[in-house]
Length: 378
Image (cartoon, rainbow, N blue to C red):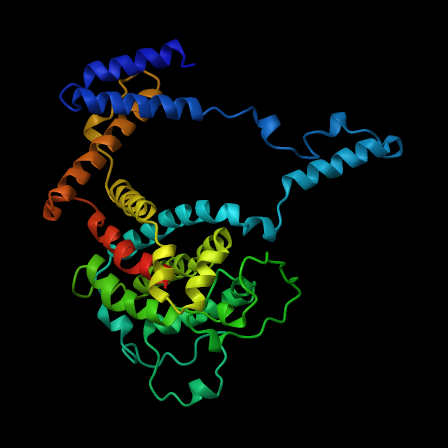
């Protein structure tokens, strides 16, 4: 139940905003704010966090500990921890895919702030780089006479570093330059992953990184970044690496999605496979309703994350008054609703030129529709 102070604040905000919000948007913003207030409650710190330091007064002496108390403590510890197998369970796949949308959109927004800087994608564009730090060079790369591009140089070194902490031992991670990864020699234990995928070795060898790399360079970068060069080459490739790794993880999650769908209807899929019906398999993998929701959600997130808040709708605290956080949250929610609905209306009318923001939401939608989802299903 909302407090009287909160209700008063909401009513005041609604009265003060007739010129900013039409009646329907006012209602939507108030519902949004009410939901946020109700869900924002968190239990006291003592019940959220447990620590031996904070519970010493209630801990029994070592020589007085009973077996039942020890067993209860062990059960509590087990309840607080999860294993890698739990983290990659099928139940978590959908929520993971949704969270990856934020990672991808933020990464593309970061990349969009720089010019295209085509020189970083040209082999030998930045001469004298040498061999990436930490990487290895087998016979295949010794035969390559062409130098690496600045992006590939940085990406190879980054992957070499990440491989030492088991990144590419996970079935959800795939290196762009797998042949250059060093063998791990540290004492980190091998992680136990769930048997989510087929035992066929070809499944684990599926790697779309090369295709994704080229699509990112030739399609995505020209779509999100302004032409030209701003000399921010180091920052550009750092942003590129974050975007490429996020996109690669999302695309290769398609293996988990396909396995999950296969297990839901093994007879239907197997019949199509036995008949070599690739189109039928693709049709069975496709859920148009879910895909449209993904496109809409990605576009709305890009609209929200890619715009500055409407500062004109935020209340200003007067001298001597305490900061009214509740009013600020209410106004921010209302501003977000206005911004999102304005952008969606412009997009529905195909009026992309008037969309103001750090990145065009229509481009994010097209990246999902034309690249991410098709590659995921392939």
